Structures are given as C-alpha cells and as structure tokens.
Length: 356
Ligand code: CO
Ligand code: ZN
Image 1: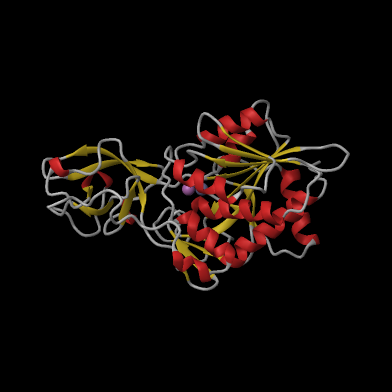
Image 2 (image 1 turned 60 degrees about the vertical axis):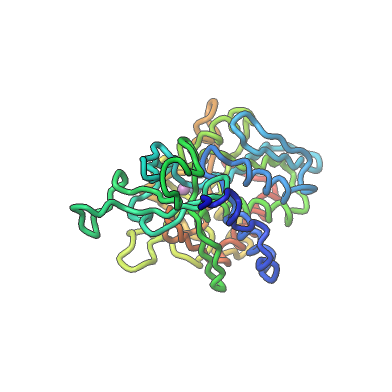
C-alpha cells in the first residue's frame, strides 16, 4: 500500500467553485485555504505577492520573510510614513516525535487549544492531511490535554511516514460562505490580509507613503512585525487583525459583536492604542457614516504592540475585524464588517492624519 503520495489529495488553492463568489469573498477563500503556519509563509506570501501585482510601487521580502509593499504618496506637503500590518501566518502544529506505529506527537505553533483539535484535520506543506486523535485509556471525554493528543496521517508504521520531525501543519478546513457570515480556519489573519489587499485596490491615491506589510510569525510572538517595523521606521503604525466578540451564548463579557462594524482598538493585553490615532479613526468613521465599535480585548494582542515599541516608540493602533471562535478551525466573520473595514481604511489613508 502506498502512503498518501504527497500532493495526491492536495486541496486545490485555485478552487473553481470560488468563481461565482463576490470577488472579495473569493479573495478571502483563496487566502484562508492556503497553507502557512508561523515560520512557513512561503506559499501564502507568493499568493499575496501575486494578488498585489501592479497595485504598489515596490515590494521586497526581508530576512524574516515579511512581504513589504510600498505605495508612494502623491502630492506636495508633509508626507508621513504609515505602516499597515496584517499577519500572513496561521496557528498550527509541528511534529516532535514519530512512534513505531506511525503516530505523530507535536508542539503547537501559536495559541492552539487542545479542546479544538480532536476530530479535526491538519494540512502539511507537502499536502499530507492528518486527523487529530486522543489517547482514550483512563480518560473521560471532557479531559483533553495537549500531550495526550496525536496526529494520524494514515501511515501503517513509522517507515511509511510521509512527514518528518519538524514538519509543520495548519488546520485544514474549507472556506464556507453562509451569505453575510463566513467561516474558515485562519480568518486570523487572512481576513486582515484580504482587507489590506482590497484597500490597495480601492485606494486612488494617498498623501502618505504607505507600507503595506504582510508579516510573518505573529502567532509565535509578533516577530515579523518586530523586525519590519524597525526597518521601516514608520511615523504611524496600524495593525489589521481579528478580535474576539462577546455575542455568543454565555460568551466573553465584551462589547464587540459581529455585524456592528470594524472594532477600533482602545486596549488589549499587550498595548494601549495611541489615543490620538484611535480618535482619528473614530472621527473618520463618524464623518463617513461607517459603523464602528470600540474594542477592549482582555486576552491577546497583535502586531501593533511590536510596532508601537520599536525604536523610540511609534503611535500605533489597530482596526479589528470581529471574529467568533478565534483560534479554532471555524473562525467566523461578518462580510459587512470586512467591507466596512476596507471603507474605513480607504477614507483614513486618503486624507492628512492628525494624531495630536
Ligand atoms: Co491569532
Ligand atoms: Zn491574528
């Protein structure tokens, strides 16, 4: 018997069924279905590079793999350097051990919760798909601890193993279009990448030099944003990422809900947003009648933390896309929120920015 030949069952990235979708939904589908756990962003970076072709003046890839695209400002006057960041990486797992029977043990890449694994699938770079199983001996159904979870790639033993120690996998689930609501693994932060790409597409011109940075390794500690922000030395920094919501049964006590507009960050567990920048975003939303929410996130942070703390400090903020079930294989967003985030960014970047 042959072990699944790598790529034999590889899920198609350019899925034909995406063609009858709204173009932004089709873009989100392409992005979320592409492989790219932290530190393994080559495929997702190549896809984004392709999507932004012709929309920017220059692109480069730095040592940590960040994709840095510059759209130069137009017109005279004081020109600000603005860094926009959305992370390309997704949470995932990495093989640490292969046993005689061909079962894999793993370490997590980013904030993977054991509760979300069992019965789900993961996808390796070579196209191999694995199922997460758990040890059942002496365990009750509600005891799921990471060390007792394993991956089964269908190998009969360790000798016909199609992946090796150090191989990384992301979750594997298809994109689902429910109409206004969309579900996918890796909405965190591919929906942010989609928002940046669509912002580039919609933005006629800006008085500012705009650095659109698709960052790496956010989920393991905002490492890509740390080095790219240091290199760019922005005057203003803005992350576009997902945030939790408080709108599900017995959910978090949090004043953010799906469908009520982009969430303008006030605070999370890693940063306090620059108040002037936060107020400027709110003013833009109000002037343009774009719905928005104010966000205080108790657990978690974003690339904005790294950008804010670079060099001698940078005014930094975040525009968040409200997302249910963050860090599970079924992250849910509202399509109107995504579109309103694009609208807010286009308006914000088209005008001079006052953060005093
Ligand atoms: Co995340
Ligand atoms: Zn994120």
